Image (cartoon, rainbow, N blue to C red; front, top):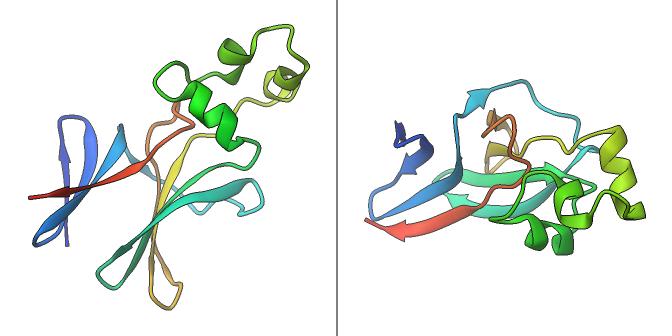
Amino acid sequence: MKRLLRDGAAKMRFTKSAIVLLAAFATVTSAAPTTDYQVIQSVTVAGGSAKILEDARLTPALARLMWGNAVDPIFVLGEDNPAARPFKARPLMPARLRETTTTGKMLIDVILNSEAPLARIEMRRL
């Protein structure tokens, strides 16, 4: 598997299809505590899986509101909304890409963009 950085987006290239990560400026980090993150997407790849992890406080409804509009939940919820309070005290953590083998061994753990709490994997034919 070749890892390429092109046009500011992290990409993994496979024989007949590609997984395109919809975030930029990847940096390798140590594994984050799993209680702070939840797996929101998992894609099977040769020899294992690629998973997107997001802040566990991020609900699917809030993620839909934020996607394409804002990286700060306070912006979409409103400053005075009680649901925004937890994010004022502790901002959302950035989304991560975690690649694991079929046995569960972690190969990589990457923060995709230090300021982006959302990310998705998109499958494309080459």
